[in-house]
Structure formats: C-alpha cells, structure tokens
Image (cartoon, rainbow, N blue to C red; front, top):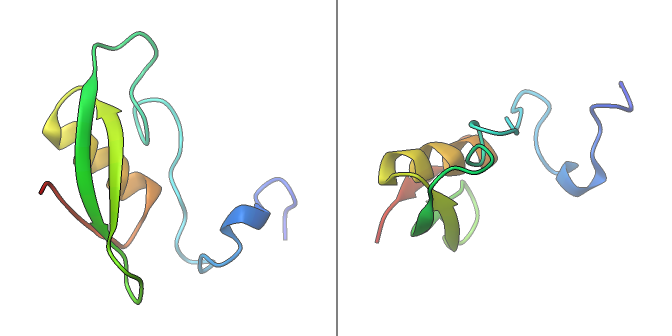
Length: 77
C-alpha cells in the first residue's frame, strides 16, 4: 500500500472505490461565484445525510457530492 494514498479518515472505503478530490472536481474553483445548495446524499447501507455545500449551479453541486461520496445517490430536496 502506498502511504501517500492511504488516509485513515477514509479507511472504511473499499479499495476499488476512489474518492476524487480537488478544485473543479469535488469543490468549486477558487474565486468562483457560488451559492449554497442543500443536498440529500444516500449512501449504501447508511442513513441518508443532508449536506449544505457551495457550488455554481445545482448540477455542479450534485457533481461535487458524487465525487466526494462515490457510489451514492444525490438529490435536491
């Protein structure tokens, strides 16, 4: 296991599921004009979670949430 890839906070995630992180992938780029969106994230075998995140559009907010929580379903309430 490469220690640069291992993260103790994400040790419960399966090896075949990789979290994609970074500007434009899991969050807006710096100095982007954003607003807050409330999302419901449904992860397998877990209770749904309500998340508020900043994004440029509704579609971008959903894309960022799916990048942060791979394998989950995301919807706007």
